[in-house]
Length: 309
Image (tube, rainbow, N blue to C red):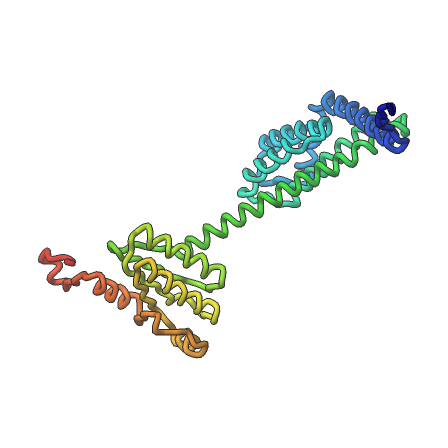
C-alpha cells in the first residue's frame, strides 16, 4: 500500500519578505495614528488656520470650516488606521452635496486635503527631527496612504459635482419645455431656444407623459421661439407627431418661421403628417374646434354665456 502524500505549502522568501514589510508598515501607521490622535486639537486648529490663510472655502464661515476640518481630520485618521475608505467616501459625498451649491470649487477641496497632508507631514518632521532613519520609515508608510486619501476625496467630490450638474441640466431642460394643460383634453408645449437631438428626445418623452397623464386629445406645439431646425430635429418632430397620434392625440404645430418652413421643404419632411397653423392663437382655436368647444364673443360672455362645449 502506497503511503498517502500530503501537500506541503512553503512560504517563499519573497512572500515572507512582503509579509514582513506589510507588518512593518502597519506598525508605523499605528504609531502615526497614535501621534495624530494625541495632537488632534493642535493639528486640526493649525489646519483650519492654514485653510483660512490660503483663502480656501471662502463661502463658509470660520465655525463651519472648523467643524468640517474636525470631521475630515477624524475620517482621515480612521483611514490611516484601518485602510478602509468607504466611510471617507460617504462623508466626502455628503460634504460635496452641502458645499457645492454654495460655490465651493474642486480645486478648493483638493487644496484643503493637500494642506492637511502638509500639516501632518510637518508634525512628523518635528516628532522625528532627531531620528531621520525613523522619519523616512514613517514617511514611507504615510505617503502612499495620504495619496490614496487625497485621490478618494477628489474623485468623490468630482463625481458628486457631476451628478449635481446633470440634475441641474435636467431641471433646466424640463423648465425650458413645459407641457401645459389649458383646457380639458388640450395641452400646449411652447418651445423656446435651440433644439438639439438630446433636447428633442426629452421633449418627446415629456409630451408623451403629459398626454397619458392628462388624457389629452389635442396638443399644440408652438415653435415660434425656435430659431432653426435641422433635418435630424425635423424628423424627430415628425416622429413625435406619430407617437402622439398612437396615444390618441392630434398634434398641431404653430409658429413655423419662413426659414424653418423652407428647411422642412428642402430636406423633404413628410408634411402630410403634420397639422400646422400660423400662430399660437390660431392653433388654440383649431384645437378647441377639434375638441368641440364653442367660442362665445366677448359681449356674449359678459351676458353670462361663457364658453360652451
